[in-house]
Amino acid sequence: MDEIAARLFDEHVDVVYGYVARRLGADLAADVVGDVFEIAVGQLDRYDPARGSERAWLFGIATNLVRRHWRTEQRRLRATRRAAGRSVVPGDPLLDVVDRLDASTDAERVLAAVGDLAPDDRDLLLLIAWEDATYQDCADVLGIPVGTVRSRLHRIRRDLQAAVGLGAPTPEALR
Image (cartoon, helix red, strand yellow):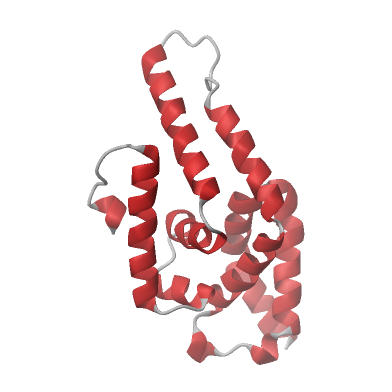
């Protein structure tokens, strides 16, 4: 059992940490990742490979823990939205002021729209966008059919596009 737990940790800690850090911030990620693997080791006998990959199982545990920290995530999105309005390099004469204003306004609208998504929709979008998870992995993590992942993701993208008014999505964005 210890060898299995060590292998599970060695193979997946980096991707789980990355996912949690992007969702909650680096300050909370180490603690939450520790909790993910503590839960996983405690429930190792209940892991069923027929229900999905180890990675998807760990993302499912992580997603449940992240949901517990939703208030922290909301505060982080609000702070990021505020920071998007500031220039990255104050006073940089090489950056076009108009482009900076347009980009910060676009980023602010996108972050606001993502923050307003329902938790399940936000989880799906962030698994796809940040973790490059497959539709099957998302289905496994969220406990829904693959067809539901596809239709929900299509709706989320359409709704975000309408909410931020940024024009038609590229084919790559609809993958």
